Length: 291
Ligand code: GUN
Image (cartoon, rainbow, N blue to C red; front, side, top):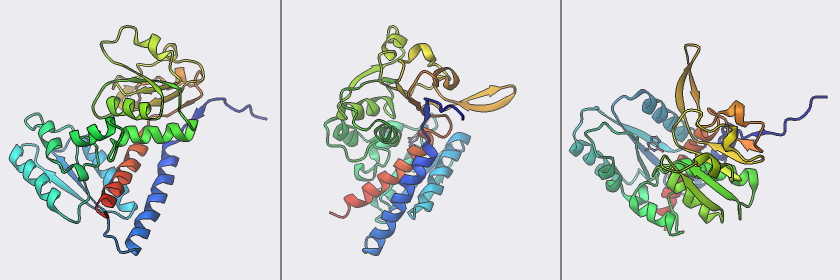
């Protein structure tokens, strides 16, 4: 008989499929009740290869879940005014409930300006200062998709997170900060470590929950991990192994796997959950219009 591995690899693809099935059903039921079809608009500026793939996957998922969706493609050299006009028009459209402007933008365009311009009730990224404020004051409406997906995986894996020590590596507005806020609201004791932290590994070794969102390939090895920890790897880093392109996370999976209780793989972990949560946020945004 084969010995069972004590390490659980959290299957983000399977879980996201499950969530998408539930949401597809909900969309159908809402439409049968006479509510309008939820609509998602994605704005893509330029032709960055990674962004183009992300946008294609987002739209594919939205369509699979039965949402109305559209992509507004703008030239990489477009003016700030052109981009602003597109967002203002989408803010006004009644058939669009969610707006996402794919980041990063070309350097001559202001991400801050465009995030602030999106109607907060349609901000399915949860990046608008109104949504950031609502999250940090415990009144969350639209929460950034990646941290939301991470929380879903953690809750399904661990149940109640009360009293757990969670350490988040990275302090970005997109992942690190909202992740820390969500963990705090789930009654964790939360630490954030970043590039200026003294002995980040020592802090991480205290973590029951370790979330790596720093964008450094395989930074976290087993010397950073407490035995039995649950490790969530948000990183997606393109590397080359034996001349072949390979995606790796911020965690050295092979090194860490036999030390932790559960771990998310890259790819197939956090990535698919982020997209499922975008659909969830679009539904949440559409429901705000019911009232
Ligand atoms: N680029 C990388 N991640 C994201 C995200 O979550 N939202 C947007 N809008 N752009 C991104």
